[in-house]
Image (cartoon, rainbow, N blue to C red; front, side):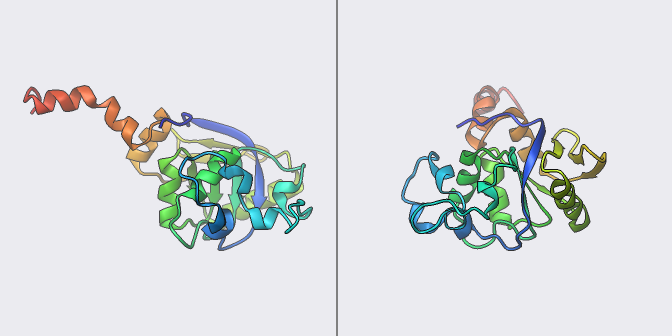
Length: 198
């Protein structure tokens, strides 16, 4: 399944300065019955977003109308816990295309890259600058430039580089998942199998 091509994303951001956000909080286990990657956004951070009677919790950031955008800014060690890929599905289905943190759990990071979410790892100092900028002005925009591998706080011009695997960068830039990548190479694969490429 192809995803949105990711090149340069300029957006406001939703701040969640909570450390050790695990996948069970991102999408509780009771919502993992579906096998399609649809509808999970409704239950993103379900137990943090809603009371037991399904009324929204007013103090949770996703229920605060002053925050919006396609970038989620999380605290250190985002996506820890179980390896459920549904956590990445929920974040994508909700509308986020980038998650920023100073540290990601490896499996969550891989799951995100596989479905079109860019996890951007920044220094703790730069993460703190992002949180402070959003706190000062909820309309603060960030620019995530995948070709340049940089993230910028547009209001201040402060920027930092981030690392990404070249293969995953190629796929995100083209909107590919692993199958799409192979499909794009099918002529080369066929020629190789027929012995015309060495």
